[in-house]
Image 1 (spheres, rainbow, N blue to C red):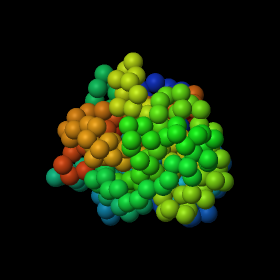
Image 2: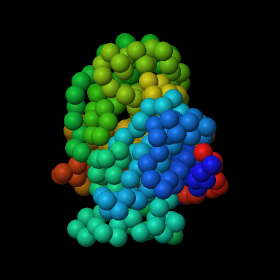
Image 3: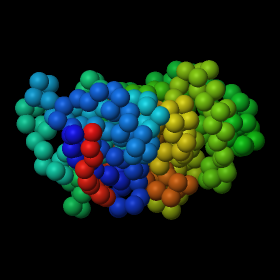
Length: 294
């Protein structure tokens, strides 16, 4: 019997019991695929990350899975929480990296930077430049969300499939009330994502908010078993890039996307468009820790 340490974090927040919940398991090396699946299913959070430091690559190695057994890549909350955990535990994950700091998600290097603000660590992750790769008619999407077609398309913007690390559909809605009214039909949403070749649906409104958020958003990805996600870095990056392409924001300006209100786990995702890509950043806090057995 093997004993492994695990940690539960709230990600894209500085306050416990908000943000996106993430289970992280510290392993001595890679596990079998069956073990990854069993442990992820046991925790039941939208994603579980497994981490170990590799002397061979000189980097923190991360793999993430949903309870349904799908592997998740890209620079999202699964990676952010894993990196901050390693730093909070004072594991020297950058000890051999001299010119740039990075970690590996399923074998793909992701550049990261670390700063400290008001006693909290913030990690910035670099995503590729946003690429618009398709669109989906509003009538089809609205029917799958329990909305009328005219409730979509704020400012004349279209529903676009946008990719940085992962391709998601950006769905602009008229206002915050419409955002709250959406009731996803998982079967219909899954069929649409499979037909058009993307993963999740990122509903958003740029209606003014008291805290000056760039947008308020909701994320659905039933194709990999996520009914609704409280914070989605792999979608916030594409949204920020999409809004820059529309001329709504400028490069090199800092923004915050608010997500998770409907799940009871409000989250703040910090984003910025740069010349060579998009940065997504945030903080995380440890909520609990313990041991599991294999």
